Length: 398
Image (cartoon, rainbow, N blue to C red):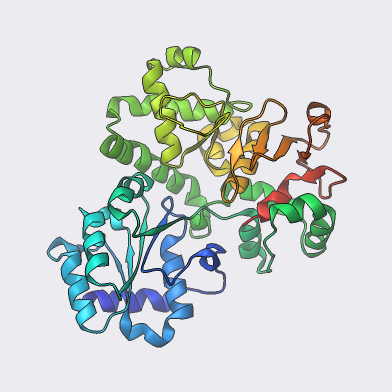
């Protein structure tokens, strides 16, 4: 255990707290068992170390951070670690990359029941693993999902300025004033295109030239390791799934014609629909349905996007569709706090109340003229007017 403590102290020394993610304020850190799920490279490890540095600096002798992919666990168990840590007065345990440890959810369940005074936070990069573990940890763990950078967070990192989060109500009711305040500090379009291309995953800052390669590795890990291991997807079908992702990235946006698509990539209908479901679970695509009551893996989505615009640029490269990118950005930023549904009039129905039509600067309200609580979301404008709102402003929701 001494080696683990030394490794923890070393990592803590070098973590910066100049910028922290907004999710840190949203987590109830007083809960006994907290789970944080999110894709690889999204910033979960940094979040844990920053929280320790900011809030537990006076109790470091009672705090331990460990990554469960450490070689230490090749001949030690998590249960043994917790027993020794608790005997030495430990109170706060942070477990990173839990999916790398076999039978982790069952052991966490036992630890939770055995040590009621111990507070545990765990993270997992395998979204499917965390979903599978929910049965073991139901009624015990509070699970949070962590997304990549919002446009607001990206601007803060790039400029060093502080920008306040906006609620959807603030944007809808006061978008001109909010856009004016932001434009007085920076020009959003100096940064917006770069964010869409490479600003979503925090690791873009480490080696910018290698960003596409690293993002490709994240995608390949999901497709080539997690789907076969956790959803029994045959390895032989992975190339067809990659083909499907490219089709989604290049579409305007993608409205699945299951019959034609199954013929094009040589998959039967049931298998294809189940893959749409798995890709949404794993965080590579976002499926939009007409209604979400009783969704099954064999239900056809009405529209499909990639999870974020960085994936679209990676997979479609120079063929990424502009309209698709706009809707992907909007869906990504809204979905973190809000409920999205398909609507016949407009592009999105949000929280079953607000209708949004997304387009370029010349987009009119023709399609939504008779719809109550309807708004135009327009790209390429710095300021809005009436019910026409700049697309970039929705990047300030988290």
